[in-house]
Image 1 (spheres, rainbow, N blue to C red):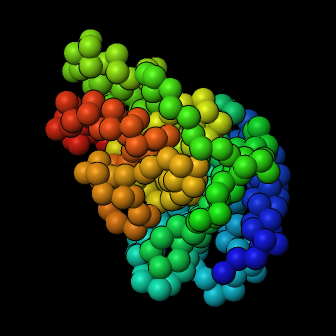
Image 2 (cartoon, rainbow, N blue to C red):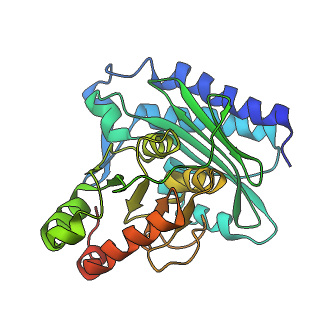
Amino acid sequence: MLSAGDVQRVAELMRETAAAELLPRFRNLAQEDIRQKRPGDIVTVADVAAEQRLASGLAKILPGVPVVGEEATEKDSSLPDLIGRPGESCWIVDPLDGTSNFAAGHDRFAIIVCLVHDTQAIAGWILDVPNNRIAIAGRGRGVTLDGVAVPRLARQRPPRGYVGYKMRTEFDRQLSPERRRTLGGLTSLNCAGREYLEVLAGHREFSLYRRTKPWDHAAGALMIAEAGGVAVRFDGSPYRPAGGVEAGIITAATPEILAEVQSALEAVRTPLLALRG
């Protein structure tokens, strides 16, 4: 569906978008450039401008393939339904992953693009904008980080992970000391794209998220799988980009690490399912 040239055109489009719409606005936003979509969920003029540029560019790469963008979905909540259409394709776009970091002047934000066909992610791109790192994955073709093939992810004990603050608090509060020691350090970068790249780079072994908005996770889950890892919902079913956003996702470098994380999650599962962080 995509030629090798098209894969690079998407990467170039992301870099151009970062240079034109994100970096000039970083640490240069006026108060009126930031608004709340809902309590605790902000959007900036950079998000909107970047998504418009990405959508326009992607339409030239694959004419007729619709774009499911995070910001467009705020205006049309039916857009994510396009992801689950059998036999059809769509782009999924997060124009500024880590918006709260960006707005606060913290250099942890990314652009994420994923191509879905027949309900499955078939290609994904994550650009770590401040560090100019890019990961590219194709279904069945592996994943690269800055043009270098990512080897099979390694198992480290105890596995270290990315977990949101509320979940991390519950792990520390509810797990027995013995059970807690089966996991290593837990932290969050508040930027899913950046966290997926850190797992690919071997700096962490798993990530766990309560909410699974497709623009945050479709590309990253594909990348982890292409590097020999696994991505599942909290109930153990394989992760797919389509479906509800409340089913959770665990990505892990190896099946053994996944089992350890699932075991720890089971011990605090009921309260975690009620959390929104």
